[in-house]
Image 1 (cartoon, rainbow, N blue to C red):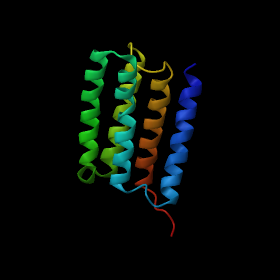
Image 2 (cartoon, one colour):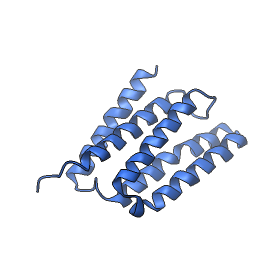
Image 3 (cartoon, rainbow, N blue to C red):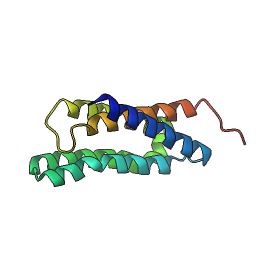
Image 4 (tube, rainbow, N blue to C red):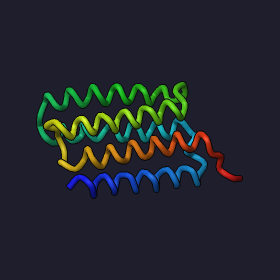
Length: 131
């Protein structure tokens, strides 16, 4: 049950990274910051759907933290945003081991997506797109 969502998350992150690379957007901190905000917004959405107020408060606080980091993405740079994505992936791994709102497979999917896209960002810092 965990392998397929993780594999799909990793493949989609690779496709996202490739598309951003091809469009010359992979090094644009604002674009990656928006991706971080979108990714962080799923957990509060799941918490609202579950009707669990405690989960909602927790996930809104986490969303605020990741959102604040994304807002300052222009100061963090691509390496900082890669670290934020990977940190969110680690959070997803931790949430997998606890009762969480949302589908049982979501933490595996999201963790793989976050970590793979973060790794692509770090790798992109050593490569340059041919013009």
